[in-house]
Length: 222
Image (tube, rainbow, N blue to C red; front, side, top):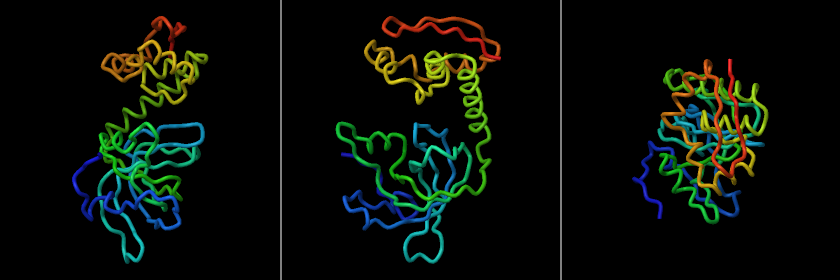
C-alpha cells in the first residue's frame, strides 16, 4: 500500500479527487506552477513535472498558496521547457493505476502525489529560480539535437540514450534488445556519461554495443 505523510491544506495533494469511472463528478481546479524538470516527449504528448504555486478550487474567492509537485500530461505541441510558468485548468487526481504496475508508488519515490491529464494550459512567463539546473538541461537538449542532426537512425537514438539518458526516441525493438541482453544499465545517466557530455563537442570516437544489440556508433559532434 502506498503511504506518505498526510497532506495538509498547503499541499497540492490535499486537493486530489479520487479516480472514478464517472469523471463528470470530478471538479475542475485552476493551478499555477513552474516546470521543474526536462519535459519527457512522446509521439502525441509531453509529460511535465510541475512545482505547484497556487490553486483555485470551487467556491474559493482567491487562489490558495500551495506547494508540492505534480505530473501533468499535455499535448505534444506546443513544446514546453524547464523553468516556464503555467496556468492549468483541469481535473486534479491521484496518479492513475495500471495493471501490473504500481504507478502511484513509482511516482511517490519521486515525491509526486498528484496528476493532471490534458488540462487547458496557458504559458505566462518563466522562472529563473534555478539557473544552474536550467543550464544543465539546456546543455542536454543541445547535445541531443546535435546527435540527432549528425548521426543516422537507429544509431542517433541509441547515442542520445547513452549520452543524455533520453530514451523517448529509441525504437521499441532496440529497447527490447537491451532488456533481453540485460544491458539497460548502459542507458542510465552515470558519471561516465556526464563526463562524456562535458567533452562531447570535442570528442571523436567509436564504441561497440554488447552482443545482442547490433550497432556500432561513430560520434563526431561539432
